[in-house]
Image (cartoon, rainbow, N blue to C red; front, side, top):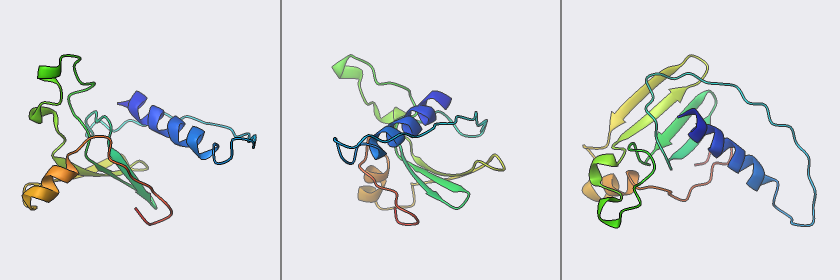
Length: 122
């Protein structure tokens, strides 16, 4: 799980410095391990950050998808929960998407959704 969060953070930092290909920017990266035992490993999710809360939606809970086309992206590997994490306290809350409309449920369990987090606008 930690390597997935680390990859996301590093990717975002790298991409944020690529706004102008001619521009060279320097930055420092500091990594701290975060232990959230109540949060399962989720891959290819959407994350939004507001104050001390992280909202995690979608993605896969079965790890990297198989390389066999007939066994890839099986429904049982879909993340059917929406998580709110507090990295400062280690608290994790979750709610199922089952009470939502079918079309919204399908959207919220997809993988590699496009998203943009800017201040408090997700």
